[in-house]
Image (cartoon, rainbow, N blue to C red; front, side):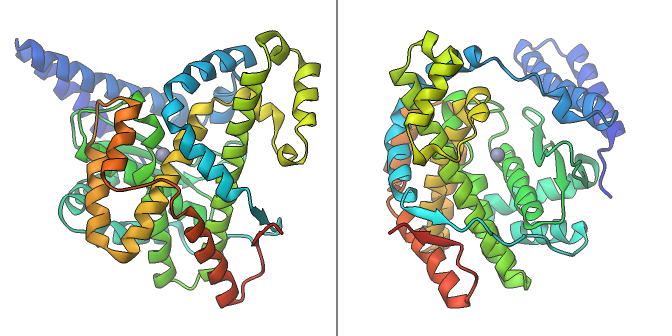
Length: 383
Ligand SMILES: [Zn+2]
């Protein structure tokens, strides 16, 4: 249905090479070369994954050694220390929750193109800069979107690939006929809009912990939108509960990592027997944590999603009360760049956002919705 127009990408590359040859302005050449780098990256992605049908999971399956994960994590823990207070509050709030394992299937029966239409409609309701940026993205989707059925061996959801200093963003999005498809499209298009509003920043490692604020915010707002437009109410509700469950998992995993790194030496960590004994002694609260996952995943991703979600929830609750104010604050977060981790956190505080302040309220609202609509009990506080 939607495939990347690779000729379009090759023409862009050719045009850039011409520009580089024609100019002697060093600054411009530097800029063009950055652009060229992102175009080549997207071409590589196309040639290695999309064009060949290679199993992405297998290709990426060079699992990093636990030792390298430990070294990377230890660096990050130092870098992201400023965010540990948020993680702690997040954990305290969500830890009181229990989830009923039998969450209903979120499967939906509609053509995937319907999901795309709903996502486009969702973004077109906004005004000003967000509207303009989303218009740019939507008008190019014919060339820039790859939208195909998810490969069961490779649970890749979505990927956003922007071109530096340009209005062009490529997307690789997979659908599986569940509500998650809608969330993936909203999420990746959200990254695309951020790129349009911040065209010269492709990577801002210090911003990593809050790099998902806008996308997770859009997901929350978009689910309410979808709820009004369809009769998928219980599936949408389940998607919300499932995401909460996965955040709780994130934070538990992060916590366990911190605990392990603080209390075991490198030798002890690498000794499987000692490692397992320590995890088991931690008892029930870590029962559901997949130890292999702890060993192979970097902490950074969990930081980014947990901290960003905590902030996104505050913005979402504000949005319900005052749309304009919430979107203004969001734009300030989106446009901030080149700050340190502490300065990003200061910015959030200056905007009057206290991460986790109303997380409990968000959970209470969900539980209330469950009771009100008579859904199966999936979410409750531990006695
Ligand atoms: Zn993301």
